[in-house]
Length: 321
Image 1 (cartoon, rainbow, N blue to C red):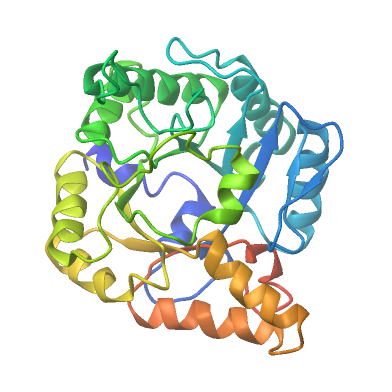
Image 2: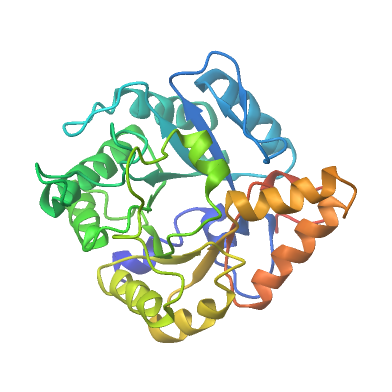
């Protein structure tokens, strides 16, 4: 059996995440924001009981989430120092190490790998002097970040930058450093969407100029999205993802058909905020709205769902096994 097949079998949480005939709580992934810049937890507009935490408060939140059968997490790490290159990853390493040392294998911990929270300009890449993307330096920085996170103890890598070739570069870097069993959950079809606002506030990643349309996908183009996911599969991704999830339902099954890989959906901050704010204004019941939205994505073929409401899975009746 190849290492690639073994990657998705090494942990009971990961095996549950990939169980095709069940809809389990482990198939719901809870984002966690940890920032070096906050002393007290900071609310995120529109996202209800989601906050930006310091490391100690994040540990408390994850401990509480575990009591509610939520044990699959995606970390977004926000350092205080912004640079254009040669990024300092000490804070990110410390955050990952503390979380994994505290919870060990009781959780599965993914890390978002991107540069937008680290760069002075808020973009997901390194620019040259003419403000064109320097793809070589961008890929080098991304692969270095992935290996650093692996050194710190991360369970899985989730690259979200949409740079051409980043999945291959990260896979090679991980393998060369003896992290061949760390899976890659690629943001393989990620659109330049209008529904990321609350996230950018939380991750301190709003671009200081322009937008991300020159490297993220045009939401008008289906074939580009299919090609992007196919390329990620060919470059060594273990799991694929569409983003935003509810606005990409038409892509999930076709991507699975083309690649043979499991495809997940990210219920992004704007989508989640729409349900949450409707609930706050008594236009619907939050739990019922979330429950329906998750089953719609599951019906469309989503193997796993990243959602800001994953910690409600037990409350909504999902089981661990």
